Image (cartoon, rainbow, N blue to C red; front, side, top):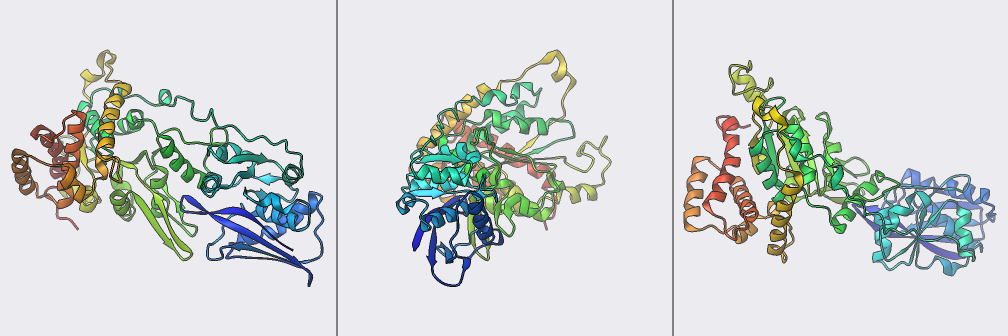
Length: 513
């Protein structure tokens, strides 16, 4: 007797259809499981056999072979248990074989027959919809997560017995309705820029950065409010679209980090890893090639506080993601690509004590300052669009409980700028000015005669690289969009150059390694 059912295997942030093929025949009693399996997947035969027995289903003494096809895709995890059990139950005659058509099964079986939740259900549900499956049966704890995907009937189950009862006529299970998942207004919970006293120039720079998804480096003494500013950046970012939320939610689903009650990412991510983080944890990797912090920050902010305290090799791993907005990880069993369209916000003191270049307060030697700043390489600085100085807060700024501009007001200007960018790049594969390639910069950042003369002088004086030159034009393009100007003008270039020139103040005389 031959039967087969369907499941899914995670590859990157997407899933592939897995055919669970079962052959039951006469011969030496045996239960073999094949198909390029990991150790936890190979152990499924014991979980399935005992779970079926404890659920009241007898397993005939037969030669049983289960193949998870295609065999060139490595199967990892325990999500295949339920699909294997259903194919076996069909082969033994407990359910009609026709029931397995157009159904995807996901879940881990306990020895008592209950079905446990697994990671990665959302990508599998998306795959089920794309491939034309009609039903997706998942663990009850993953029901809301899978129900986010419209166009496929999602059924959450507690036990193996429930699944069998559903197919033999007792169809009491009702698909979960996802209509209320995205109704919550998340912006009210975010920190507000009006709580930050002073730092008007830094706020302006962050507004520009968010409008065009540019990378920012904040430099200033301890207590200047660098972290406070960074924490409020999500409050001026536009709300996530459904497609953006779905992509981010897939990443969190793979990592098993989705909330059971609200299994969908509504907020822009804000990731703030400690400086002791390893390169693998930051960019992703490991034996099973899992996403890292940069992927978890997709669509949002990756905040690296005290940047020089991070391991230099760890920081250098950001070069490719900052350019390509994705990370590709190659392993023995395959190559995995994860999205990493994050906005990098880095903060640092100008020296170990934090008060350079104020020599009345700074007690670091010139060599110590150079060594501290030298932890940030030229290639990383070139990938940062805006370098902003967070000055020390003055006493007058704290008096009278002065409030700054509300995040809501800033967010409206950012939204308007992004609408302009969306229209401009409607035929391109990008959304923001920060994503422009060198070729696209030439097309969309056209300069007039006076502007070209200005940039020629700046290129020579600041000794710019081609990358830093292009980044000045990208920032100027964003400033022009905030002003609702079609063309980049001198004042836009001058402001963009100011943000680029600050790194010369601190790193200008250094000899780079």
